[in-house]
Length: 65
Image (cartoon, rainbow, N blue to C red; front, top):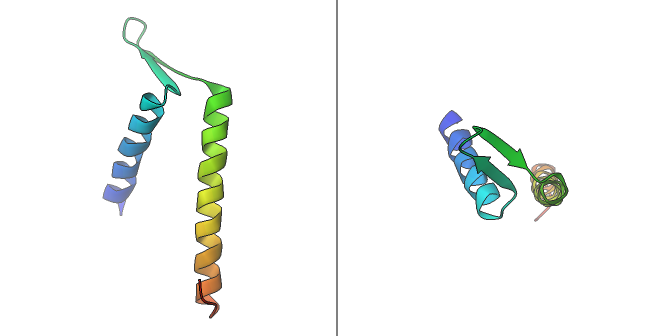
C-alpha cells in the first residue's frame, strides 16, 4: 500500500511542476507554490476523491454506480 502512495506522490509532484504550480529554485534550495492555482487544483482533486468515495459508499449499500 505504501508503494501506491509513494508512486501517487511522485505523479502529483510531476504534475504540479509541469503545470507551473510548483517552482524549484536550485540556488536557494526552496520550492515555491502558487497558492491560487494550487487551490484550484486541490479543489478539483477533492471533488474527484469525493465523488469516488460517494460511489463506493453507494455501491457498498447495494446501489449500482
